[in-house]
Image (cartoon, rainbow, N blue to C red; front, side, top):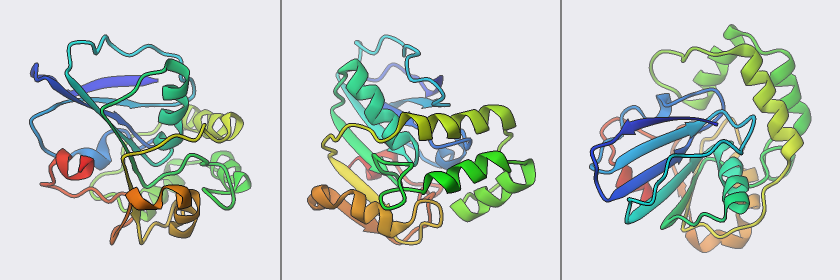
Length: 206
């Protein structure tokens, strides 16, 4: 896992973000807030240690897209428990034809991945602004790792956000995947990347 501090001012609250595939921090660039923010992505491996987070009184984990399953795998492995656990635009079963994306489609994306196809993916996902740089071979390997790792253990989330215009992980697949946690799920009129400039991180934690 790769990690970088987005904000680190010594507050007593941390937002730990598990990002999506190959997008880096671009989807979250317009979000603001007072909390420290640590961003994690590149889920080819999930055993890379994070910094010591013991200084924080409160740690909220926001997992986005394929980061949802990756975060759940990581939580199950480490035993770490955040103050609040949030899922956005993802499921615990990313490589699943009914509760995520069909494995064959993910393999096809990996096998035919180019800078041009990645740019198309970004637009379908609803990314505004420049297309992030991509390491083609690393991105391919991450997609295969997602397939090979399989579904994550079931765990309770405090809030689940399901975009109603998702063209990456179909809205219906997300609704099916979270059927047992429907009381904490909220539909939002947005694309796969639902974050907008000027929004506060706390809006997604609520």
